[in-house]
Image (cartoon, rainbow, N blue to C red):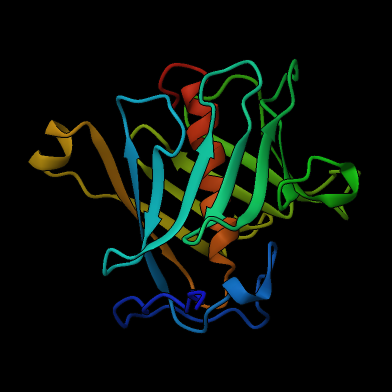
Length: 216
């Protein structure tokens, strides 16, 4: 009997206010009415497939990211715990602003484009990415933005140009994780926010910063 992945356990109660309307980018099934804490574990010393896993607070795998890292044809596949494809992340080669595109499932066709991510400027001392949904081709105003420091694993995802927070990253280092060559950090996704979308953005942050030797 096939295992059906249920919702993650909610984060500890806090002053998180749910969005008036669910922020569904990849799918409404990834929007949960409570805040969700996810742990991202990245094997630092490998550049092989499957070196990136996302778990809930109980250690149950929620997502995996597979792909050839640091290769010319860098393409990453976000799958659920059962290995079903959720979306494909692909950088656009030879673009000035580190542009990445995210497609539904395993597709890379324009008709399946969900959203595009790019740096807000060429030279950055801190991370600042703009996210544009597929139905916003003019890209005059971003639909979401990511700001902070990837090096410190401290980034925040906002709605558009507002101060409305959708998700926040924070580090969780341990002696064991350092010795094992693992980079672990937590992400708190606010209520009614698509947590698969948040995971895809984190994978793109990792891809951009792997490509420029550590990033900001």
